Length: 256
Image 1: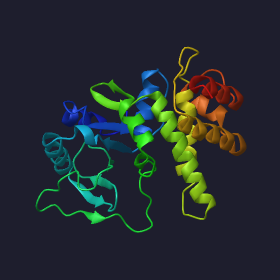
Image 2: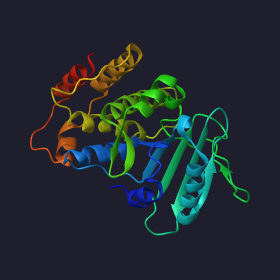
Image 3: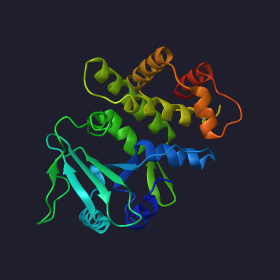
Image 4: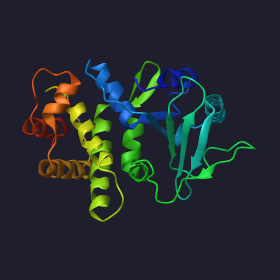
């Protein structure tokens, strides 16, 4: 379990309709729910569900941040609102919390709170640009699962968001932008981790737009490769799932 997830649950167990946890944290919990070994991750990424946001949640959110005694409170500006809270002094809080809203100024900042701009050139969450796309945003907030009183995107949503993040980060790096290799490989690896939990009975209907992105993801991974043996070992699987089996499983699951 991600460090601080217990504390996050204590604060937000009554607000499941207001947020959705995405990213590596969601992947970890879904993999662990299938009795497989999750990977290490230090942060909690969450989407604010604009349609369900209320003052009670916003107040609770700032209580959480204050109680964590985070050293750095950062924000972006523009068409979206992105918050990042780092280095808690209080014990038991997540090392990093990232919160994304599609609507600027959706979270009213209390008086006396000073948010500093996220440093120029520093990468925002891999999902910020993706969630500006309404199709991806609504797919994420409509495909959720409640685990241990916390609201996560479900397995198919993890696959779609992670596949898109892999594509975006790969293209950015090719275009000369500064993107860490880790911020590319972790997304394709997480898609693989989730794919190992799919069975023949798992089939999902998705739009042609999402299918096109998923096909591109499989094409790119086919060229770039993926360390299937190591991933299967880390997950605790006895037998290796090859890239060929992985590719066919994704195709069958999503009707490609």
